[in-house]
Length: 193
Image 1 (spheres, rainbow, N blue to C red):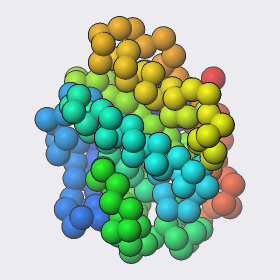
Image 2 (spheres, rainbow, N blue to C red; image 1 turned 180 degrees about the vertical axis):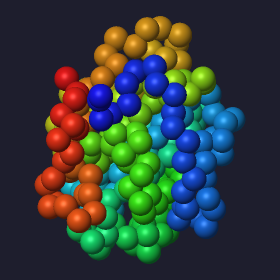
Image 3 (cartoon, helix red, strand yellow; image 1 turned 90 degrees about the vertical axis):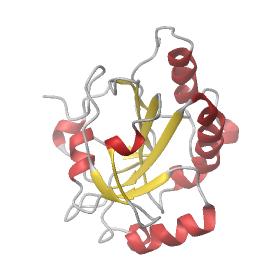
């Protein structure tokens, strides 16, 4: 069985605390036509390098009824920068245009099959997965990026066209699993093309 959600799968529900003091579930975003759930964190150079691109994408598609939700599933025992307290500090400083949720148990990361930070999952209005993988082909240095696969997929989805590239390999640091080496990945996680 694949580790990561497959195209056509329903978005798994969640109930997670956010940096704004609220708790969010899948239903919290039911008004959005498209939902982008992405796994992120505070320390990864690939996240830090591409945060402004992700911000620009979220702002670009917000008028088209697209909601973005960032989830940090990293263990603070691996990187203390990824603690919930540091997430609050980071959101206060950066004011990102998305809810920033904390997956302390890492259950949501396991359910979605998050591999890296960042790792994007795009769900249509029926909350079926239509795209998963990376945004940029060079998230660490966006100036060197040649394609934004996330925006390409969303443009095709919103235009009612078939998404021609539905799966890409996410590029970034692996999710930091509690009690494991910083570079460990579940053996069944090598399921993307």
